[in-house]
Structures are given as C-alpha cells and as structure tokens.
Image (tube, rainbow, N blue to C red; front, side, top):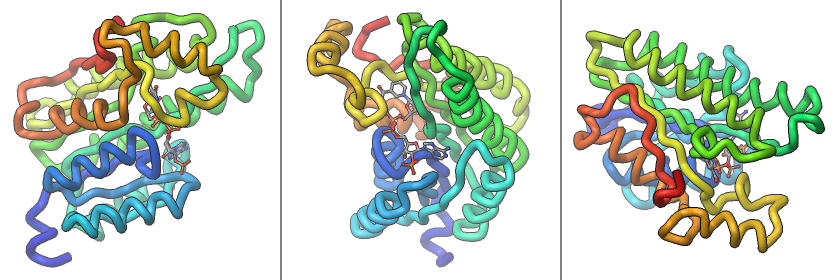
Length: 248
Ligand code: NAP
C-alpha cells in the first residue's frame, strides 16, 4: 500500500466478476475507490476486471470468497484491510436466481437461494457492522420483483424481501457511526442471470414492462449504487431505491 492508495476510500463489491457487480466495481474504481472484486468461481473474469481497472489508473484486488461461507467472508474482509487499510463501502451484489412455481420448487432451489442471497448477505453485513469505518456506506442488491410479485419468483423474491428487511434494521443498528444502509432494487437487467433460460419473446415482453421500453443495463444499476456510495447520497438511509425505468 502506498500513500496514494491508502488515502482513497475502499469498497468491497461481492459478485463482481461479471454482470451488474462488474459494472459497479468499475464505476466505483473510476469514482476513486480502491475496489475489492469478489467472486466465487470466475477467477479469470475477476482478474481481467482488476487488470482493466488498473489500466485505467484505478486500484483493485480480486478476492475469492463464496459469500455463503462465513469464514470465507471474514477472510475477504481481512484481505481488504491488509491490501488497503480498511473498508468504507460494502456492496452486496452476489446473488443467484432460480425460477419455478412453488409446487415445482425442490429443496435445492430453496436452500441455494437462501444460502447465497440471504445467508450470504447476512455474512457480509455482520462483518461490515463490526468493521466498516465511520462514515461508510452499505448497498444491498434487492429486486423490483419484491414489488411486482410475479409468478415463479416466490423463493427468489422472498430472499430479497428479507434483504430489504435486513437493510432497514441495520441502518438503525449502526446509529452514531455516520454509516448509511440502503438497497437498490433493479428491474430486468441485461445479464446472464436475467437472460439465461428465457425465450426471445419473453425477454422482449419483459423489456416493455416499463414505460421506457428497454431492459436495464449493468451501468444503469451501477449509477444508482454510485449515487448511494458517493457524496450526493449521504442523506439517503434505510431506503430501497427501485432502479427499473418505472416498472413498479
Ligand atoms: P450474474 O450476471 O449472474 O452475476 C452474478 C455474480 O455473482 C457473479 O459475479 C458471480 O460470480 C457472483 N456469485 C454468485 N454466487 C456467488 C457466491 N456464492 N459468492 C460470491 N459470488 C457469487 O447476476 P447479475 O444479474 O449481475 O445480478 C447481480 C445482483 O443483482 C444479484 O443479487 C441479483 O439478484 C440482482 N438483480 C439482478 C437483476 C437482473 O435482471 N439481472 C434484477 C434484479 C436484481 P462467479 O461467476 O464467480 O460465481
């Protein structure tokens, strides 16, 4: 760590190897954060993103950790502190989505989404509540389906509704430390998570559900996260910001 990197604020972005998380990591790096690019399995993508950030003059490290593993999450915070001296921003972006009617949902569908989306967010929030520096920011990724309540999304949306509840309660528990805790709830956004397994007709129909008549992009969501992580977001606390083009 040199004098230049140590004076910058530090952000951990979970699930940053691709999709929305990668866009958030890149954006926060260009906004002046030292960034920890977390991933579970996609090491090549994570390392490539770190290289891209460094090439653009930013600072980043890749950190492997399955967010559902509490010990691994603790080690990720250790790695962030060792590399950059502390943690100021946590973006809980890592997530999976498995869709099925409740009647056809098996235990694996339920358990995996609870483990990554809910327990994973709990694991990182617990570390952040203990270790974030005063003045920090926490941004959790929810989903606009919590508002839409679409068929097939029951378990996925339930994990994210729980994330919204963790958000509101933690925002009160960190009282006195000038830390804000908010959620960003995207609508359909053009990433593997949304596109995989959907027909072109369904994608077209879902992209027209909002009055702007297009899918969100990872950069659209990164802009909302950057607002909450930056100086302009300082008075927003305990809120859910739905970033969906006006769908709900
Ligand atoms: P994505 O393209 O599938 O990317 C998911 C990211 O999460 C990858 O970097 C993946 O890393 C990481 N990840 C998965 N499991 C992990 C684990 N156990 N530990 C650590 N990292 C893990 O998904 P996305 O569309 O960008 O979604 C990002 C977030 O936005 C999710 O929380 C999702 O629920 C939310 N969201 C997305 C949409 C949408 O339409 N795309 C809408 C609403 C909300 P590896 O490849 O290394 O596993």
